[in-house]
Image (cartoon, rainbow over the protein chains, first blue to last red):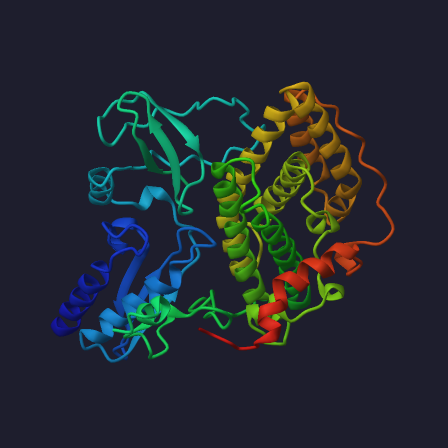
Length: 171
Length: 277
């Protein structure tokens, strides 16, 4: 029993260290994509991953990397499963993950919006709480595009230091 | 180091079929590890038909959105349209994978995307029409994303756990898509005389096709409420929804545009079946 517990802990630790392919400063644990690691009574290590976006092209790479690291660490039977429910939300990015994002010049997300039925919000100027510039810290910033180089990021610009920056948009 | 060929050197050390370096067709199952069981009380044929229609809408729309790449008015818009298309492509992959699990054929996603002809597609005609003017594309995206969002909100409570999870995820993405399209409709409609004229023309071209969407189930009122709100803010007039036209993409009756779109989308997969590189 003690061995199994230690094994789960070790396996979890290994899976948790896998970096995200698009945001390599974050681990899959920081990002909240790694949901669970367990060892079945038969001794198979099972890791659960939840994709960030439906079309996330990094999903198969994440799965392959978790598999490779666990088998590389000596686990013979490893299964990396997709878990779709509940859907991933930026609220799952850990405080450590948020700190690392900001440190690398990417503004971390605010709280995810609750689904609000009713009219489409149609104010064309940005209405959300201003995002802090990850370089100079001012909130005098503006959105340039809600879509960026990866599904999870938006493009912003700082009006004080004039630098463009990326922002992990809430979902 | 095979330094004379950039792709060969990329793949070096990954010759053992590593999924990280799989290109072309034959991607792995996007539903890997998700339970394939169909709950009691769910009709597999109905579930398959629902997944197929929604998957086809998403694939065809994603292809049209991808066609804006290198042609959009600004780089930021190009990135946005490609991102929206990518979300829809991801939804299509999951829906096709689910369809293959429940329709009795055990086909993978590629079989649905690449190896069916236009007659076998169940997407609405609105999705396959050529991109035309940017304003037409925005009017179409507004209608399609407003409808899909309303439909997915309902399907998030589906008795099938896979469809419910795909829909719940999609709701978050579609909220962004609808917002993007709605903002463009307002910006162009309430813009210059020229942008207003073209936005109205785009809306006028889209409306004859909406009854096909509304026929599926009673989402019409929800979608119309959105369209009324957005067109009012855009100072445009919303044309009446015509009576359902004869024939429907949902029955496999398409315009000539779908076959051309599919020829483009499927040509490589059909010329080199099972190819990976």
